[in-house]
Amino acid sequence: MSKVWFVTGSSRGLGREFVEAALSRGDKVAATARSTASLDDLVTKYGDAVLPLAMDVTDKAAVFESVNRAKEHFGRLDVIVNNAGYAQIGAVEELTEQQLRDQLETNLFGAVWVVQAALPHLREQGSGRIFQLSSAAGLMAMPLGGAYHASKWALEGLNEALAAEVAEFGIKVTIIEPGGYATRGGKNPDPLNNGFLADPHPAYVGLRQRMAGAMSKQPAGDPAAAAQVLLELADADNPPLRILFGQGFQPMLEKIYADRLQNWKDTQDLSRRAQGEAAAAN
Image 1 (cartoon, rainbow, N blue to C red):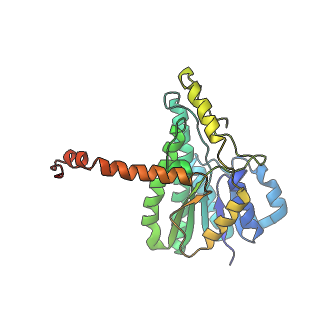
Image 2: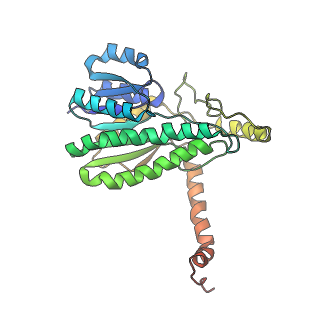
């Protein structure tokens, strides 16, 4: 039986690939974007199988209206893909309050509104899949990405809690953590030049240059390949809670997590004393 998808951020990038992959295999998709003009070609090609919805994820009322409209239009919802988001770049000292709030409103609160709108329908059905697009940036932190990391780390914790809350209703949650993808002209987008940049402080000029050099070495993944794996996960009986899309950050992540474990081991005595316990005898 074909599935019904609800995908945010469908106009370009991975979201667009996810929508096209689902439609091409005969599924139905409610595709959201700030402007539905970017989805006109999908309507021309796939007709009634695609429902274009103009939606800004930061508008809670619009999110609930769009999710309900998709359910009424197709009769059910099977797969929710929280994909909409962007990366605010800037050192913590450089960020304005509005930039940080906007980052969290889109990446975190927007995802929450979609989940809250969809859950009553999925729970009533006794089934459903929720895919949250996080990032490798949700598993580690690098300079100049503080706002973005804050939003993605929050999503990681939120969705891990969500997975435990909804499992008994037959709803499964998977957190997808992509590395870099060639979503613009076949190239890996430059995260340090993406249009969401804080006003630079002279103190961080050298850091920006070093980070630009490091990020340019990350391999660019194939968005179409990512979409095919997403289809497999949507069909899997027991999808993973987390999955990396791409192996570019795997070695770095392995070292980061090994270092964290070692740090906790090295500071055990301090940890015990902080709780009021005696330090372990040598």
